[in-house]
Length: 345
Image 1 (tube, rainbow, N blue to C red):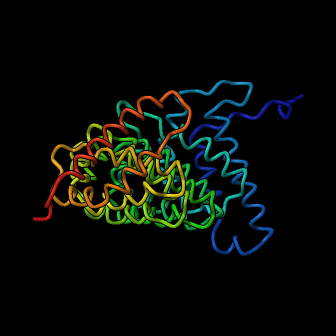
Image 2 (image 1 turned 60 degrees about the vertical axis):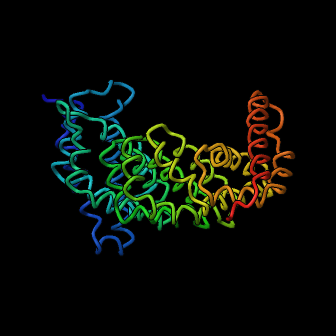
Image 3 (image 1 turned 30 degrees about the vertical axis):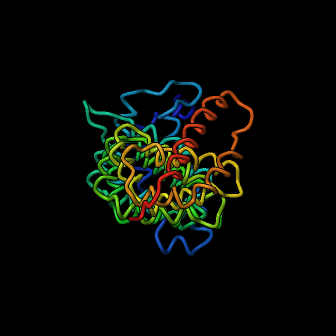
């Protein structure tokens, strides 16, 4: 007598798991989506398959994940174009499926065959998928999920470089000011990563696109939104003061238009913004090669500037002494400016 029906089912192979995911995603077609019962059934199948994927990549509590299987899963994801399918079907997926997908996403991206990250290579051959992830910020239902996926992608220099140089990058200047706070904050996190994670990539980008970039960045610094002003000012300090961007900083501090923006922020009603503005303003003032136009602006406004600086304090903290020393040096330099006569002649 056979009792084979009591035996546990054979574990699925990576190929079978990925095929099941692909087939269940393909089933989310136009006809299925408009039929409630059919959609529910199809989404349950997707959820089950993503749960299997998560178990295979992270272990299921009973068995540890297998490194070779993880690599095979990543290879199959690329071979079967499941990466593309996942991105295009993201807006249809249920919450559990998205949660499991996010858990698996970074693991899949890290899988290597020899020296090659296979999923990263797939994106390099299908860069338009990164554009698709960026524009997902326009859909608040999936913006946080797609944002997390995008940030995992741009941990790799080649993918970050593409996004920076793509037409979609300019959309971030809109996304960071979206009315939905959570979506705007997530977009800013991605925007910040793009401008800080890969120093040489960012330096090359800013060198090649200096005028266009700072033309639109100025809009963030002068935004009526407090959070936007504060975050963009802090981010400006972060990437301007990176050693590879020293040539960008030197160019920036020669421009009167940006000195005026920073001086306006120096008198902002927010103390935090004033302090952040000071750390950029001091570079303009301390520059030994100030152009004549910058000297004129400082001389004309020296009384207001000195009053602002005398009243500026970071509050109690370990950096007080250094701040006060820097402030005194800047005050001295502005006082020298005020003593210069006939600057405009």
